[in-house]
Length: 458
Image (cartoon, rainbow, N blue to C red; front, side):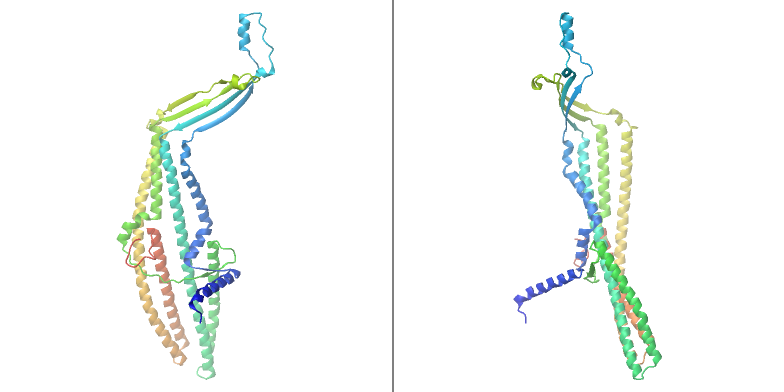
């Protein structure tokens, strides 16, 4: 017997070996949470959304750069086609005997430098900054919504595949039962208890069932390959699902859930944020129309007319400082393009408010409908569970009667079909309940599946 202190290391070693063999065979065992985490990490759609979110985040983090002044540097060398010596012209007018110096090539050249700093301010910039911040918040909402939609899709596929696998397991068990009946029929025929026709019927039923089970198994394997592809796993990876469809019933109070969580609905949150951004756009339009814009400008422009001289001693500064207050009064006219654009924004705000009210009402209706469907599914699960017990008892009795030669093969197959239909019906109802509960979680943007029974919110 292994001592307790050696028990955990042995189990850990066995687990490592098992994972190594799984990796060598390119087999991955996944729970539903691991499947969601893998898909979130490797989804190309989410990666694209993450890039969009990063762009908006960078714009939000550096939004203060709108207040940076514009600084321009330039240097210009120019050559005039003709050179006019103003000084020589004046001296010649004063003294006709004055001889002007000979014009040289350097007299045609001039050097001009320029340093310009401009800073603009408008009250509209304040709301513009808020818009950029809100755009990032809207991007974050869209990102979270995409993650939740991806999670919902992967969970539904995971449990849907479990449902298909359980159905396949039932069909395989039915095939095993058919094989056992062939063996029993062969024994009964050898002992002279049944005619050859009954033996042949049993063999035909078994052989006819084989292709359908193989086809179903192939379809399930194809669905597993597709699931691995959607998760972003390497080609050829075989996925083994670890879990079961056995949801715990949750007591749901529709009115309380709506009151506490309807405003958290992802679609409502996204629409509300877009409405806030549109209102900020209207504020920006009003600020641009009814408030002036300030521009401060300072320039340093050294000009050197004699490029052969010492530039630091001979330059002349043509720069200046200016402060400008500008206000476009035409934009204030009610029929101007800017005011018409503001009216269009107001109309779009009103349309979005109507859409938000409609979405709120529809979401409340969808929540009530979903809760009613869950209650109906819960009742169906309880009813089907009872019918399974009856179907199992009927099958056991028919099987015993068939083995004793007092029942026909058709009676046994009917009893088995009824049992399998009841079992499959129970699995379908459980999946329906679990899938509906996940849809309700998405609508309410809250956790219900792991919630203790009797509670209705987080």
